[in-house]
Image (cartoon, rainbow, N blue to C red):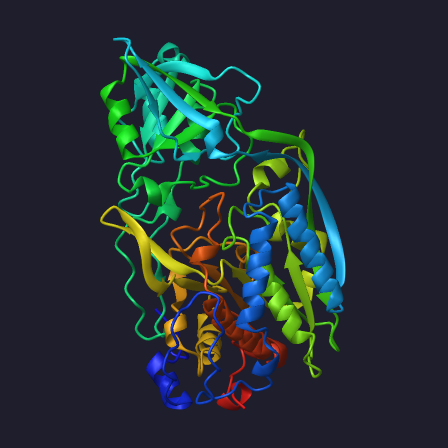
Length: 528
């Protein structure tokens, strides 16, 4: 399926020479000196790429802002202002698009489930996650209803439940649904074009991917039909699923929703129709919260634009650290004197609250995210000859293998997604960008299919040549009050920034026709 232009990693090694021995992954320790055995990218200066120490310091700052930065909250606003200030220091013109929404925050300790069986026996169940933007019980009575454990399960269970039970049965119930992850959840299997870094990639863990959980469809189908919703992780450990912030980007829902683990699922199934459950989810709602999207423009000699994007809101320090990736790239290009094009750094809000922002009554009633920035600044988009998106950087892999949640001591998969029908030239640029880097600090593949589009999807839909990075740790959506900073490695992030600045250097120098694939790209166009 891949274009014949794409080189295999072995071909690249023949061009680049042997790679250096890999340094140990030691958290926030200094990055070993970049090996000089690989071929240099024409026009790229590795000496001015922000160091792993700098990236580690920025990640700590991001952690200190939150570590959970729900859209429209003070901690999220602090990150927005940090990025605006730092981009301004680099000489960028910073513009804003201000949104409003009713923000939604919760602490898992403010959620509970208690059950009273018909026999009089009572039991409290552990809540391991909440349903973001579910109905809040704060300042209200908790919701109580008959336990109705549905035979149907999974994302499509809502229609089956509505067909099986009467309106009266549902109206007095707390509906319980198993949401198994075996088989992939709501995400398909990711497949790659030939040529990876390293070649071959470490195997994908067979453990269920907690970040592929659903739940939005059952809530949409049932929220006006029942009193509350309990969703169940029934094939992963409680620790793996704990704090999962899914499904995200929901509109404000009418009923509370919470998640339990396998033991809670088994128990609720055993008392279905023979007990009542009381559910509390005391989320804090703040009307007219403010959230800013930013556009930082670094003017170049040409009006042609290289457009970068990400998002700045999220549940943890890996999910929204693409803003730091853009800051690193802007820092790099602010020091390059022979830059040829204008760089636009899109830093939108609303990735995790697009439903609340789109609400015409309590929100701004329009699109946020990269699509919103494209609508706000169409001239930059129209002048774009290349684009890149960066999300979820520096992640080490954790997996729930044999119901045991723990590290695998490998980088998490890094999924680079090309603009459709441009995988030949984009893949060649991607593989060239890895020249001389430590393969043990990377797990890079060019995606054919199976990965969510992310913030770069809007740019790829426009047919702008480019690529988007979607890091893919299983804790992608973990909304842990302690954060996930212990699972990040600045050395891995440094590798990704090195790759990104190398590809951006090519995007700055290659002609629009070369970037589109209508003109050939010679080795002399890429390598010094």
